[in-house]
Amino acid sequence: MELSTIYEPVREDLLRVEDKLKSISEVEFSHLSELLSYILIGGKEIRPALTLLSGKFYDYNLDRLLPMAAAAELLHIATLVHDDAIDNSMVRRGRPTINSLWGQERAVLLGDYLFAKAGEFTATT
Image (cartoon, rainbow, N blue to C red; front, top):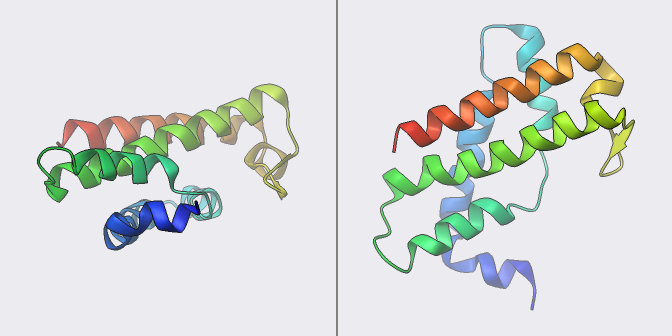
């Protein structure tokens, strides 16, 4: 079975999650915006899809599910950014890592920012 088949019941809402994640990169600090734009592209959307699909079992309230789905993805990305910094990895998914392009300090701070943003999203639900 293809992922696209599994995602079908929540396809439109996954696009909203993607928009929410993209909106995070629209910050006034150009250096942070550049890092966020770089890291928030791609991915398989598994965590947001599972969050939204889980909502189909009870009360599919998109106002509550959307921030949670985005938070799940941000939390995952934050762990990857920190993992790459700790391991001094140069490449992830065939692309240079944040730490290899912008340095360890910025990678750690970006991971921290993503953790905080995930917490903010979960606090709004």
